[in-house]
Image (cartoon, rainbow over all chains, first blue to last red; front, top):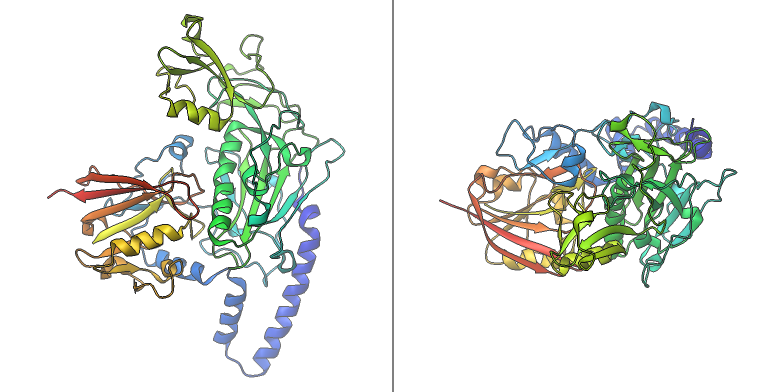
Length: 383
Length: 135
């Protein structure tokens, strides 16, 4: 079982000392006759990430029409749909959180809580859970404005450990993305299922996304992640990358893959981000993302998998052999300009002269759509 | 009230009490659109505009904005019954979200009258969609 105490123990000690020091300062302030309100304000100003949070929290409190809605399902995250609300004329909906409305204090309160993955709720259709009030565990000394990136050494089992970066414009890639297929992360037992977008169960998931630091075939930055997991990491990376491009500010970013016991496939990853120059006003999150694939059962000890509907390990024939090249694989009908999954029942009926096997990147797939290709209506192609 | 709102690919507006994204070119565009009337925002939204921008800032801009005046909604309420026109800006990106704009504009009587793509300062393509409420 993963123990955060090992990871955050040193930081927790630092926080405890900081809390002790703060308590001493507060006592001294009180002795000098300063009002409790001022002390409270000081604490709030120091600990609350931003003024913005207070503003928004106030608005939320005063806005009874913004009712929580049902937890987003996998489908709802892929495609926005109208959420039921008690007041239909209100244009917004808010997803429920398992965390308190006001993020937990970070700099001056109690030491960082010790977390254990066993305390996390099991995956139930929501791709993430917020940790620590969605506030990252960075200490003050860790928040810097000089760009750097560190990739932890692989452990004794060859697994990735923690990666940390102070992300800035200067770390962003300036060249085309490279090939990463030479890396075989632990638990890399590739399988293909028609229910998985793109067919491949696993992607080589960058812990720090390519768009942020431009890392290509770095074994210390790539883990075996499901397609679902990879797709769910990207929005967080987009948020960081676009914020940096817009502001030229820095974002502290740390991704910690969580391996239970000697498992070779991570159960998930903790992603923490904090925009430095504006003290978290722009970017602030601390989430655990589940490395799961709905409909597929994964043996995290080995990386082997089978369809949930089958109720047992995959039998020969169900799992197709595909090139282990990290690319997307589809079958194209050049005549009808249709994109088929390789497992689509229509594929065998395509005339050889019209058939083209596609193996390419997301960008190359997008180029097909630009050329007029559409997804097969039966297998839904690349969607 | 003319509503301005930004959303990502999943209809998201904010995550963890923060806007999903921002863009200087978009802010300048909003000011240009609203130059002959008023653009109402909350104190939170004001911070992404130039300090000299002619904004009407208050805690409840969705109440302050009169007919024909603009309201850029981020952290505030969106009372759709007061909205006569919508400028919907799509980032054409996916971001994490826990606050969404999921109003079904068609069922509320709005029709899409114009759609235009433009390049932002940090976004390759932002789509501006204008919806007008049928009488």
